[in-house]
Length: 549
Image (cartoon, rainbow, N blue to C red; front, side, top):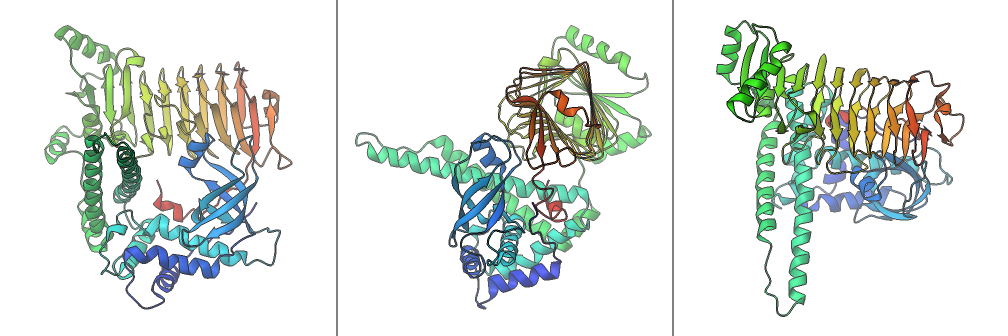
């Protein structure tokens, strides 16, 4: 099912947004931006009767307890122009999922389809306007804008600089490190805005409850108030950082003088050792005997002349490491905020029981994944990865990632939790590893490649989800006890109709990209295998997604 998509130049976007937001030639402060959009939307978007695809956002999927991403076909029944929302009627779903018959959604979540039952409607104009609205709120509007001074013209102050920032990132005129910082700050700010909204609503509800109780003194939860203050303070910090990064001249200075996670002293020390590979031992403490035993365990894994450092914090080791360094970690919980110097390749090995050697996320980390690898080859051996509040445990962007004797689990179970995600043209090799309490254990995109041997899955919603052209080889794996399916293949290649098929592994007999040897698939509630038609291949410009993580 095709939808309208638009890929426009910087000049085209600038002219469009200037006309929409400054057509009456008056100052338009941040507080009036939504009203200006409401005027424009009411003039252009058809009020009722057009069909669209609803790309259900992540949090809504979580509320409905359905897989993300999920796309359904809907009919617009009434547009609320002042709120920029629309009442939709759901007319077609792919899976056996339960959704309300009608639901009010933001306009920017809809993608009008090219085929319409009512050809008298101006669906092209409607799709064009929704695209403009979506681009603006996804990439140009920031969570702190609403607090701007009403005497300041938002268009003059922000429109051009933010558009240029978007297109600079899109054209790769911003280096990867700076682009990652920008994406992370924006995502953190949006998360903070959501938290602030929820906290303010909770405090307001508590105040109302206290007013209803005559004998109860109205008391505000000091813990929530303190948290609210910290969030507002952090939002102001992000705003200040982004004001610098939005300025092209300041951005250029920062790119010419990049920050580093390793101090100048450490750089000089490493150079003096001819930049030999280093090994880090993360040891949270113990008796002299235990410490000596720990060091003896790693002796056989290292050459005699390698340089060793000992630290109590894994993030410190990651920040100080460089590609292909080795990190050994003792038992305990190790809180990190990313892969640091091992993002492009390296070695992480647990010393002791893997169940007690846990890598988990620092509080308030804003990345979508705990470990993000995009280099040559990474090995994780004898460790446990806990997703915590994050959506993804390990993201394999490119290169090869190997896991041996590991555990990937979500201490906070949700249908949204993904153990490992393998992106196109990257490879995953997993041996003797267990996946526990996840929504989907492994997700493999088109042209991704995975090999799994002697792996088990416990208390997961679904085992392996893959797309056409993904290559999967499973040997002696136990894919059983899933709440939904053992293997889900989203395909246009192996289905002749728009209807999906579920059943036994026999459905995979002609699927040449999937190999199963000695695997057990049983007791999966909805079926061992699902062949699901891909409703849509893309619903937004790939170029514009460069701004996203």
